[in-house]
Length: 171
Image (cartoon, rainbow, N blue to C red; front, side, top):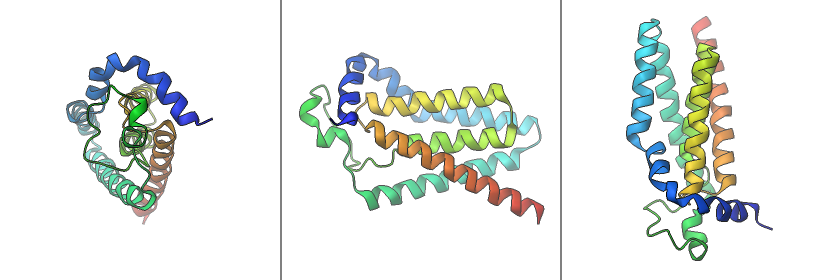
């Protein structure tokens, strides 16, 4: 049994939510979150930390794209197109492992958590990370495993970037 395919076939019954899923995975939503957090970091006089989080997320995105080329695992909308007739187009990207949306959102959220240690803000960002990640499965852009792997890579990279930042700050 292919758990990825079973989960994807189950989740597409909610395809009527695809516009909402597109919103959560889109630039306007991401930009609004980043801008809001930037203002918050500016107000608490930690704007340099915010810039570091943004740069680290950009590096994570770059690393995710390298991994996509390395693994070359197709997106489900290409591999299982016959299972998802509602998909009109898959998009220009052929590969899906890891999900960069999941990687980037979880990297960003983990760094926010490590730097702020604010349970309320952390809960909001991890909640949105989960929504964005699941939106990728709903839109048949990624398999559940691609999203989970992307999320885990994002968390690990965040921890590595955080440790490097703290060592640099001490020196």
